[in-house]
Image (cartoon, rainbow, N blue to C red; front, side):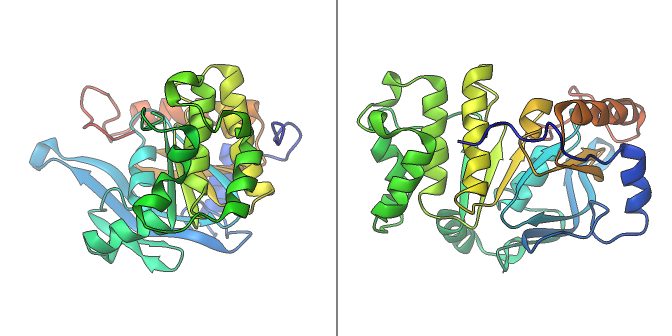
Length: 293
């Protein structure tokens, strides 16, 4: 399992990124360094009507790189989870286009979306969402059973060994720690060999030790298994496991860091938060609809 990266990597300051963004391609302000697995163009998402309208996403363009762990961060109300939900086909943009692994998600019927999510996209949420009556192994292979697809035992073994769950495969969720349950959820997301895994606050319910285990696995799934992962988080330490961190404020993608350190992430968030608080876009939790995070 990978140890925490990002302790010596180069970072991009907020000011430098903002300056770079004015003349470069892509919403993040930089041209992707690798082929992309998911793309959004002109993404707008609004909730409510009239004076109560909230613009959760405001013209976002973004490329997620294939074979990389990308973290998405921002102040409360910045739209980071809304962006992930639109990218993953869990929510529809009001305006704009989303393409995942060559498929135009934003133009799909619900039936095609369901098939895409079942076969090409993996999910890890803050809640473990395990079936309590099933063993760890049965929970891991559940997506394949639902899709009526055979289990690739060689791949299953690689995933299970990478996540360190082999001694616990016969245990039910109640017999597992929180960290072990989330590792089961991670293995479940990977077992179908998805094109991309979307993780929404995957360590939000874990203590620091369990969080480090899960984050280490997500990073090693990229470095060792070739997975592509996008992760929403509010935790600078969690973000430091990523190859790249994208920052949102007021529904816009404003800057990024590559190979970040926890301190660089914290400094960038600190610079963004006052601006978000002073902006016209409502970030007050009392005014934002559920799901705008």
